[in-house]
Length: 494
Ligand SMILES: [Fe+2]
Ligand SMILES: [Fe+2]
Image (cartoon, rainbow, N blue to C red):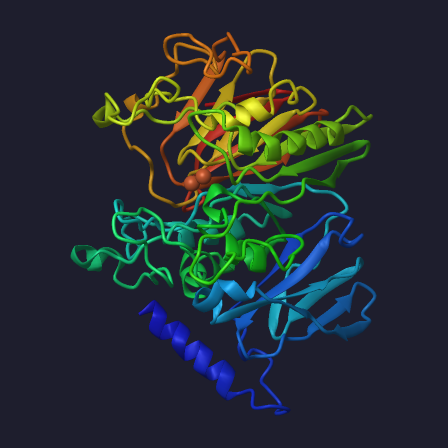
């Protein structure tokens, strides 16, 4: 059904645009949204984007200023690398910076968020949202209770946030729907080039249709509600959803971004630049969101090749977080420094276990913990997702690690007993040995852990005190399931 709807939309768009002909302003726009971008892109912090069928011209942006003046400007097309081949034959993206001082903006006939507030009172946070379809695991993409992203997006929008922080992992449709699961995922667009026999991953997993199904259609309510600050997840690594990420959501598109070296081949790994955005909160109080791309790396070990890319990103983030009067810095990166993965009871003992990768390690994203070692003390809070739950982990002396991976994708485990708090510190093996001799382990246990297996999102509201936030953890209908408090580097929920 989904592909039928999309195909119809494409036909309407294309049929309405013979060369030079007038088009209806809505023709051919698949999605429109406003990204929050750093001042290196534009001083207003806002860039409008449109996703359109390939072959249709970019729409115009119509701007209405607070003083009533109106103006119109063109958008620039963003084109994926030629070697992405059939995967992105269907879609293109367009971009245009928005100026400051707007009351409204439209992309074609679609309204997009146009204000970067002078004071941010409400921040929505969520991540890990696509419908999981792999050769081994299938989520019921056709059930709103089993894959609740659209409902969650509607509730995020209903909360009327000033800005949305998306913590990564949009794209999960990495395989064709298995023939015996068609009632679950029969409408799910498959990869353009399927995985080779015996392989888990396709050379390029994502396609324009896959992105439409996993993100552009279900997230439309969020796109209309507020500007969105987006983080790249490991599901946006080049061989997974990376081509779509680069075309639609990365700040700057380079010709080499994620394009495979040749058609049909896998794309090489890369890391996007670190940047920060300052959000005014109150008189004398600024939230600095520092964005680090953690799409790569291992959950279970230190990998030297990824360390070489990742460590400089955290060194830069640490500098951006340096002390400054009134500034509160949050690290926003997809993979947590201190996150507790479920150890599935059915996996014990893990048949793939080795000495360096014991397979029962439930501190996740070890490559991040290693790369950021000694570089996290300037942050007030660390926001991530990656683990498909809502979680808080407080290590002594460290900023609280928050995980918002409950946006809609399949839970890794629904058994709370699987999320055991490790009896050993990060960068240690369960036997208490360093995972890597070059990385001194953290020989401390968490002082606080809170894990909730429930789909939803979080709403942050600043309290009157510097460094103080009140956080409402909400389900997909917008009903609060936990109330949390942040004070400086500490975070607790009940
Ligand atoms: Fe995820
Ligand atoms: Fe992830």
